[in-house]
Image 1 (cartoon, rainbow, N blue to C red):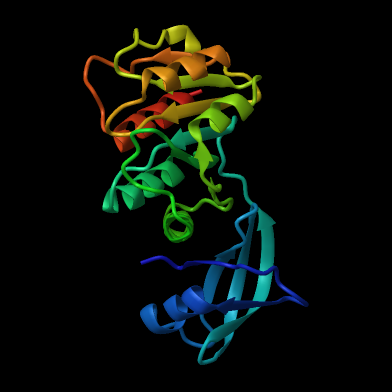
Image 2: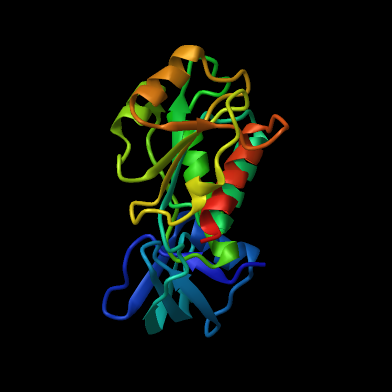
Length: 235
């Protein structure tokens, strides 16, 4: 089980405090004891070695023994706009995108979307990011940003990024798309189970996005997102 814990607030005077979920995990799930050493990370690139000093009812106090800047991120950023799948598939999607090094996940509101990115849903996704980061060793949290409409997403994206809409009924993505990725990284869009409307596809093309299929078979939302993340991270 994980011996890494997410630190919401930076240490003060070489003391760190875990609260709520993380304190419960350390004290009651992992049965941490005073004097034991654990690893903390702050989600913005720093990792800490710390020793448990006090276990309270709702918090845990630790002495920070050392601090290091740790970079386990990809060479270029990857932003994925995704029309969320249903149910537990959302958690699986987040877990795998964190492991693959995706920088940002943008839940999309589309005409045929089946799962609404409510505030409660976004909160679950962000908690999933923390849990996946604890397991895989990332020190920077993948950002789950507020939901965007399809039109806003395709019109506001960085024009210097390599931008692609995954669409099964378009020609296959050309291999040259993946060569020499720009410093601005990759910007991807994956539509809902029912597919994107013609208007949505055309609005992306009008903004300069490439539209392409990821192979001969139609992929589920989370599979398409993983394929894009893997291809983009190979460089």
